[in-house]
Image (cartoon, rainbow, N blue to C red; front, side, top):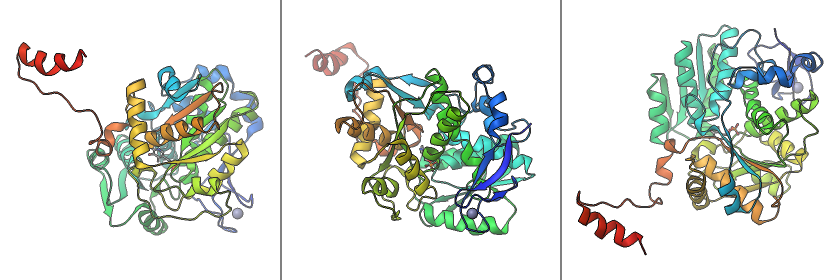
Amino acid sequence: MTYVKGLKCRECGRTYPAEAIHVCEFCFGPLEVNYDYEALKKVATRERIETGPKSLWRYRELLPIDGEPTVGFHSGFTPLVRADRLGSELGVNELYLKDDSVCHPTWSFKDRVVAVALSKARELGFHTVACASTGNLANAVSAHGARAGFQRYIFIPNDLEQAKILGTLVYAPKLIVVRGNYDDVNRLCGEIAGKYRWAFVNVNIRPYYAEGSKTFGFEIAEQMGWRTPDHLVCCAASGSLLTKIWKGFKEFEMLGLIDRVKTRVHCAQPEGCSPISEMIMTDSDTLKPVKPKTIAKSLAIGNPADGYYARDAVKASGGSAEIASDQEIRDGIQLLAKTEGIFTETAGGVTVAVAKKLIEKGVIPKDESLVIAITGNGLKTQDAIQDSVVSPIEIEPQLKSFEERVWANCKT
Ligand SMILES: *Cc1c(COP(=O)(O)O)cnc(C)c1O
Ligand SMILES: [Zn+2]
């Protein structure tokens, strides 16, 4: 049973059947999945969702597949962590972390989008899946694709973190390292996708892939007791995650699952690659593509596909935008770790740093609820903080050595 009506152009509204297509033939606008919300009102109830599987598939009726899911049975439904220690450090009373650093099986929110994309790719009859990636998507397509028995072609820029490369290679895909940045890789993949009959998760099946991001927002609302926070700080690369969290909140509202959404969504980007945040901060109508230079490589997209839609979502919500320097990102990672015991990657450092700034500026007031998006795991970006963590203390295996070097220094 499906509630998908088809695809719809985000610009001109023309409709298309639910196939492996992503741009409008008439205006070249991007296509988006369109649902039969009247029919959904009868089936998408709180009770039904609450008794569903403990994965993103508990929202299956709001996801774009026709049959049963075949990929990602354990992905999603990650913890929403109440973060009082970080909250008091930052100066807010009601803080939560949506923690996709522990998403199954590749430790980032990309497991959500890939679960949906590959389930759809199977329904559309593909045998080969592919992607252009800033790292986490490569891990997820490799892993989920291995388990689902797909041929996999993964394209990445040549400056990625070692752990993201190894975390792709271990699943034995074809990994193609392109001499260039993500935007070069993406352009190349657009050409390849036009020629080969592959399911490119972020090209020809992007409309389905993108829907997976809604579940990050659905879970926040459900886990807060069927309400959304006053504020959400979310990072952006292509801008798809932010845009779709907003779509997800509005869908819940439309279906009567939650009250009117009052969440202000704030866009967080690294200083060295912040075309979306810049556009919002300067109230400009044109997105200026940039050449990324940042330690937050998972967010290093200089020409973001959903930049304008992310801007629109932020504006519609009454939100704002900020940026974080490399040092602020490192500080953000370590502040989160030492207050809440969560080790996030650079993207999470960006959201923590930006939340800190927005609280300091009074954009996020002390007594309003806030969720910070934690989208990836710190073990994948160890290089970023290698030189800024505390040093271990090395001793001889004797009590005397312990007392001299450790105890004598600590008891003061
Ligand atoms: C891909 C990614 C994002 C942003 O995704 P977009 O949907 O492209 O904006 C955020 N955080 C992490 C860790 C990612 O890997
Ligand atoms: Zn169109």
